Every structure is written in C-alpha cells, then in structure tokens.
Length: 177
Picture 1 (cartoon, rainbow, N blue to C red):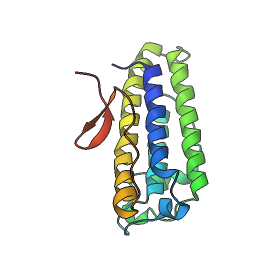
Picture 2: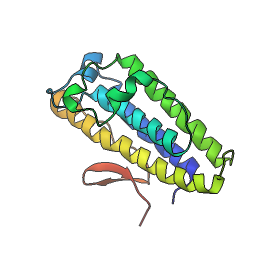
Picture 3: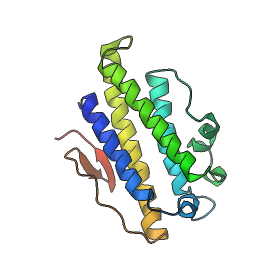
Picture 4: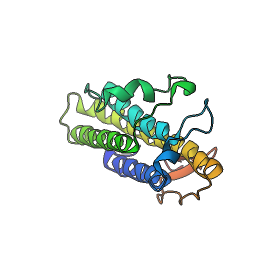
C-alpha cells in the first residue's frame, strides 16, 4: 500500500492535472452545461473538492466545511437538473484550494502521529487518499469529455507518474502488480 507522503504527491499531481483541464477555459465555458441533465465543468470542480473534504472530515477529523453554502449543491445526491446556479469561478478555485490545504494538514497530522489511534488512522488515511485521488481522476474524465467534445479544446497529456494507469478509460492510481 502507498505511504501518505507519496499519496499527497499523487493528490497534488491529480489536482494539477485537473487544473490543466480547466484553468485555460473562459468562465462561461466552466459554468456551461451541455444540457439540463448534465453537470457543468464547474460542478465537477466543486464536487471533487466537496467529496475530498467530506471524506476526510467524516473519516479522520470532524471539522466544518470551508464553504457550507456549497455543500448541498456539490453533493452527487443533488439531481443533475438542480446543479445549475454555480458560484463564480474564483469561488470554486478558492474552495478547491481550501480543501486541498485541509487535506494536506490532516494527512500531515496523521503521518506524524499527532492523532488518536495513529496506526489505525494511518491505514484509513492511505485507503482514503487513494479513493480521493481516483475520484479526482474519475471526474477529470468527464471534464475532459466536455472540454474536448463539446467545447473543442485539446486535452493535456496524462500526468507523468509510474503510479497512474488507465482502467476502463479512467486515470487511476493503482499498486503495481
């Protein structure tokens, strides 16, 4: 199983890949929806961060959301047709950055043993971070499809990591076999 420092490096690599998928887009492209029953790139960006925070908060530390007003909107239980009314792009970027900062801080506490049940939380954190990274890449695939198919933009290269592979077309980190 991966160790936490390597997983945090991969988390940053996954987030950087996400940034390459949307940072050069115009705000209206980030917020555009191909149709009513489809989520905008901006929703995926907020959802990726929302899930990372939700998982870390519920599995390793009870801490408040960095932007509680976004929680219901970014929840995948919200029907796609109700995922409009997204916030401005800089707010999504700030939310993503705040969550990443909290993920790093909590994983650093776990890695350093500054938590109750440090060995147990280390196992939880390693599985958790693998899932968070793979979830980031899962939504990157959908962002990529809208970026290239609907908006006509080229796609960046896949992340350069020996730990990243493709499974059913999706980028993922996986233990070498």
